[in-house]
Length: 268
Ligand SMILES: C[S@@+](CC[C@H](N)C(=O)[O-])C[C@H]1O[C@@H](n2cnc3c(N)ncnc32)[C@H](O)[C@@H]1O
Image (cartoon, rainbow, N blue to C red; front, top):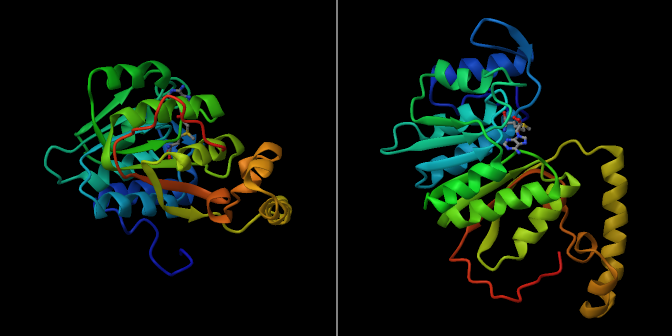
């Protein structure tokens, strides 16, 4: 049971999707289309999927995209959330879908009967610029691919070009140092605001120590003039935000057009 006594995965509308994801989560196993059982190696937690599903259901979202499909936990969740919306379509980009992941993500989407779905087995560094160049637009995107700072930022860069005003962007693994740095950067964009997060619980001992250290450093930064603290300290200290820093998943809304000028350069 989840902490608030809801039945796990009960938010999914499709019975097949509910059975598939609850079974994968409880057994820790998934099956390839040729019947081979594999360990569930990656995938959003139930609370994260619930959060994404709710975000999509609460908003007029039809065109969705994610980077990173793996065994299809997030993919099945997103496909379920957009089902029955006229013209809805989900794309998942995954460079290793038929290799490392044995096509299990795409097979799971198929098993649930979701047809408005396309898997693009490519490096997002190639695929996203092409989609943006074609003039594709998005209402929702999940970034959960390669986790280095530069790669996640590159994913964001092209998704930002496609995301419509009012659209939602979600980062997974928000507490990861690289992803967290990207999130801090995006938070400075005038056209993005954080609209929600999934808290990490329970906190590890290491995280509690880091939190205490950052709180102390943050208090020190606040007594210094901003120009001084920004020169001496990283924004992880000057702009410390425990929710954002310790979340597993962070969601942004794009609130307007991206009108940053040539010199735009925030402290992040
Ligand atoms: C953490 S897993 C995604 C988990 C998935 N979102 C879920 O909830 O089930 C990361 C995925 O990103 C994919 N990936 C890594 N680098 C990539 C790249 N450069 N382009 C596209 N996909 C990439 C991996 O193959 C892997 O499937």
